[in-house]
Image: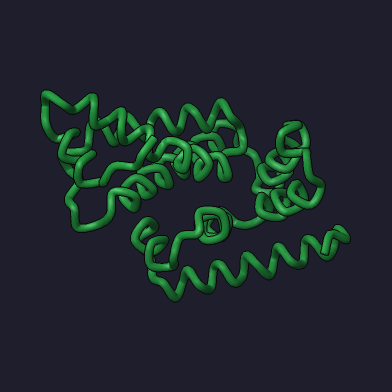
Length: 185
């Protein structure tokens, strides 16, 4: 499918008669990227789909609040990030588990899924990422996998570029240490 401009999509979505057409284009253009953005934090296909569905519901209901001061991509990532954090916080409260237990559960889920198990080094990297604190994990994923600039991440997370650079640096160091400890470097 050929990409269409964000302005065109937003224009369609704000037009009552063409709203569904615009929403369909938005989903075609951004669904996969948002899915993998969420999946890197959630790690379960079913939960990722649930969070993604909530994201698209919020976008559909809130498109009239979108002001073209930022990019549509940034706005979508902010919603996806906030929905993912909300989901993770609810899960944590529901199961009332410690942070270490949460990280171990995520790491075990990675081993259990054969698609992720295809490559030992990739699995070890994912395990290292799962052991990061939530903010560092989020910043690392957005920078490394989504190839977002620090400014784009700053717009999504509404935090300073300097703080993001520090978070990313600390995340990389922790990943390196983990990989060294597991003899993967």
